[in-house]
Length: 148
Image: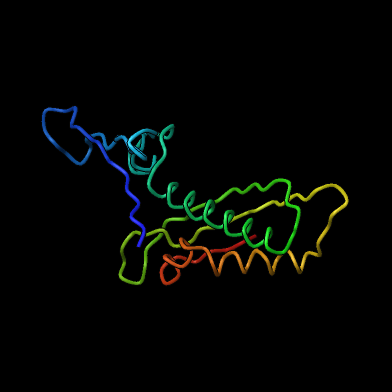
């Protein structure tokens, strides 16, 4: 089993901890790369920082893309570029708890000049990528994923 880790660092900057205290923190990947994270702006966070909900959408989008590229390479599709805009939606689940209820992916795939695939074949490859994506499989029971 693979073990993948990050480090979180937060310190209180106010005299006492309250609901309004800053949630801004550092996420450290591989003991080297740092990212400043915060609560979503709707919950008092700095909109210039990433938030866990965006990070979840990014993880899904990235995993989906890498799976799509692996499947495309196997099919010998000459993918030249891949872009996506992932959008996470917050709402309440059946227990009334706040959750990420849905993530929409908007992948745009470009191929080498002169190479085309049908829209049906591209849609099928996107669905295959979704089926094999580790993060999508992790979220399978709780988050609706749309590939638009």
